[in-house]
Image (cartoon, rainbow, N blue to C red; front, side):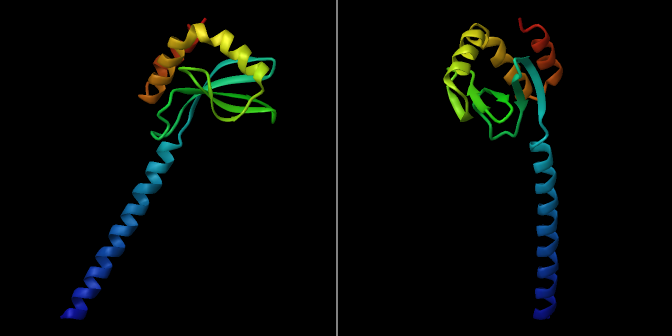
Length: 127
């Protein structure tokens, strides 16, 4: 009887592990579904806001230009969260987007809440 109980316990454990792996895979696929909304593309520099996983809690946008620039910039103070960007480009972005800080925060919050339609409208009315 003890051997049968152990066999049943192992089968139940395998089922639980398998179920957890499937759930984790589904969560990962959902978490990394990225909505990219282009705010501006000028002089080959792209500024985007993404809907990212729930671990990204700091409002930010992404700046990229070939392999020269690839950075995440905080919206509240325009400091560099991660990546690399030259000071000249960062100053230009800060000067241009600082007056639009609240709309950027609104876009970021809409995306975080999964409201891509509102975010898209906000971007269309950005300037």
